[in-house]
Structure formats: C-alpha cells, structure tokens
Length: 562
Image (cartoon, rainbow, N blue to C red; front, side, top):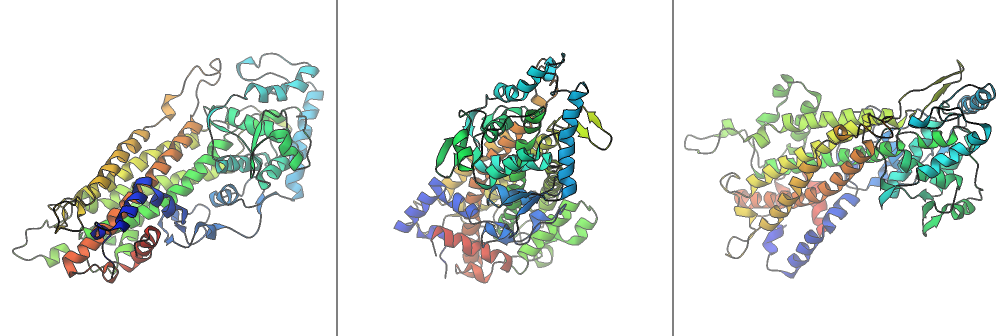
C-alpha cells in the first residue's frame, strides 16, 4: 500500500525528497523521461496535444531512415529528430531539385554579365543600396556582409536551437530560388551531421531582414572565413578552421548573393519556435493529466465535460479538451453526478466552481492557439525567407519581404501568453486543494499527518509555485508591437522581434516545467488524501481512473518514494 508522500514527514527519506524539490531535480527528471505522444504526428494534425503520454522515453520519436531535405517536406517532428536526437539529414538526390538549385545560381552569374541591377549582388545592402558596385566590390561584398554582422552578444544558444536553424536554412535553400551553390547547402548538412555546431548567441536579431546576425555566425563558421568564428564540438569549443579540418574541408570563397542567401531569413527564429511548439504539445498533454488528478481530488462533477454541452458550443479545442478529460477520468471511484447524488440535507455546492466547470472553455481556446501556431510554424519551416528570389522559369528576380518573421513572432507571443494563463488556472486549482472549505474537506495545506501540530503540509511548495506564476504572466506580455521603427536608417521600419519572442517563449517553457513538477506533487498528495478521506486507506491506485495510473506510478518511481 502506498503511503501519501507527506505522511513520511518525520523520516530521513522525506528530507531527501524535499531536497529533490528544492533543487528541482524532479522537474528535470520528469521531463527528461520523455512525456511525448505514442504515435508519430501527422502533418497538419491538430490533435497532437491530445494523445496519451508516453512514459517509455522520447526517443520513440526517432525514425530509422535519414531525413531527406527537399525544400518542402519537413515536419516539426523531422526538425526535432535532427535538432534534438542528432538524426542524419541528407540533401535530396532528386535531379529536378538539384538542377533548379544550379539554375538559380547560374542566373545570378548571367545577370551580372548582362548588367542587371540586383539588390545585394551588385548593390550594397538596406538603406545603402543606392549605387552599382564595381566588379572588385562585388567580389568583396558577400564576405564583408558576414563580417559586418559578426556582433551577437549574450549567452550561447543551446546547440539544439542552432541545429534546428541550420536544418531549416538548408531546407529553404533547397527550393532553388536563392542563387546559391549546391556545395554550400551540402556543407551546412556536413557540419550538422558531424555535430559541429557554430556558436550563436541570444541577442542580435530583430526578425526584420530575418536573423542576419545569428545566421552570420553560422555562415562564417561553415565557410571558414576566419578562426574567430567558433564551433561547438563533442570535445568543446573549437575555431572554424579546426572544424573544417575535422571534415577534410577547406575555406570557401562566397560567390555573388551567397552570403545574403545564407544570412537573410528567419531560420533560427523558426528553429527555436519549432522546439517551443514541440515542448508545448508535450506540456499541454501533461497539463490535462494534472487537471484530471485535481478534478478527482476535489470530487468534481463530470457533467461539465459531457459531449452534449460542447455540441452546443463546438469550438474544436473545447470539444477535444472535454473529450480528453472524460477519457482521463473515466473509471474513477472518486466522482459522481453531483445533482443526482445530492441528498436533502447536503450543504455542498450543486455545481463546481469555474476552474473545473469552465475548464474545456478555458483550455480549449489555448488548444486552438497551439494548433494554429503549429500550422504556421510548419509552413515557415518549408518557406524561402531570403531576398531577392529568383524565378528560373521566367528568368525574373523578385525583391520582396519573405524574411519578416511575423508568423514566428506572433505565434510565439500567443503561446507565451497562453502559458501564463495555463499556470494561473492551475494555481487556482491548487488554492482550492489546500483550503478545506473549498476542497470538500481535504486537510489544510494538504497536511499528511494531522496528528501533529508542527506540520504545515505543502504550504512552502505552494508559495514556491506562487512565486513562479507572476513571472510567467509577466513574460506573457507581447513583444511584437515593441519594434523600433527607425531600425537600419528606417529601412527596416517594421520588424517582427521573432528571435526575441522565440527565446522568451523557450525561457517561459523551461520555467513552466518547474511549475508543473510542483503541480504533480500536489496531484499525488491530494489524490492520496482523498483516498484516505473516502476509503480510509492510501491505496490510491485502487480508486484512481486507470488512465492516470501510469503517470502516478512514474512519479513515485522518479522520486524514489515507492
């Protein structure tokens, strides 16, 4: 029989348990175990946040075959396989695609010979693109562009973020409208597959002309422009020339437009956003499990989740959240129909408070936001985001603005705002659980040993959670509208802040993992105290809904309290 976690309050074991909480090892362990979906996601699948938790490990996601880069076929899960799990990525051998890449590069050479004026090829950049360059200036322009943007600052980005950006950049260039050589696309993939990852830092991009400064660090490293460009390897940080030696490659001189093609685009923002969407999908599934624990501990009503209700307000996310909660709480011995089970002398509420009763409506719209963001990011993964673009069929060049990272930025702002709302909701549920007047008489602060007067239950842990919630709400404020209108001599007079938004969202996700770890402690503690209150024992598995038992067991296993 399982004793509730805090009944062990006088044992040495609990002291170690508290140490785990205070250092948040629990948070790290619970998410490294891989709460991912059991099945591969399908493209445009809005149900990704509603599949069952997989407690066997995240590497189930991996495929056996290399990821083929074709310019239009990558999914979010493909990017995760390469970025996080170091799966191999290969440029397609499709002759039609390769010939298009070659043709776009040939177009640039021909256009220069014919004296056509092309931005960033025989002109300078941005607000300085006012004069035609000489042949000597054209040859120096692309390398100079990289040097001019070697100015990122701050902490190093996680290598998986840079890996995602490199993959997405290679994919964009494979569309064959950027004027770059095949050799350079292949070089990006060689670095990626060898796990030689250029060092990129957290500040420098305004998401206007794409991620110029972050991508300059990648471009400079892969072409070996100078040893001052650094690369992360399995044995630590090395210079770009040492990285080339490991790959038996030599520094390469950029041709016209190639520096611009490598640097001008949203690839790093999109890479970080991709990892954010993947993590949020996993977290949202776990969040629904947490709420399902809380509903049972509070002895909520199942009425609010009945399909009849949501048929009459048929938002997709609302319906899916309600259906998933029904699935997760099915078979619970803690729940009943409050109305039909009421007796004449009952003094309990006829219906639940809003945090339970309105749960599908509250979380449903967030589910829709996640699904919409997933679609936008997946389009961006397969987009060409540099300027200008070359139509080889019509032998035309187009000066345009695909480099603006607005889709990434707004998606990340919405996700980050939603994380704050999610945590505030859970915070409200925890407040009910620790208050006997609202919890159907669970002990105050979920004290596990009511026979002593010195125990305070989970009071400290609730305060810790309360300290996190305002931070996530604050970071949920949007950044996309705060752009400087004067950027780069007023040329970049609208800009997306996509890089900043994606980085902020990643930070919020990491903070939220700590909050959810705390929430799971409340989930287990409250369900065991409810078991004792209703059935005079602590064997929660005998009464808990079957769908939650695997997670319940995993929490115990991780904590070492079994």
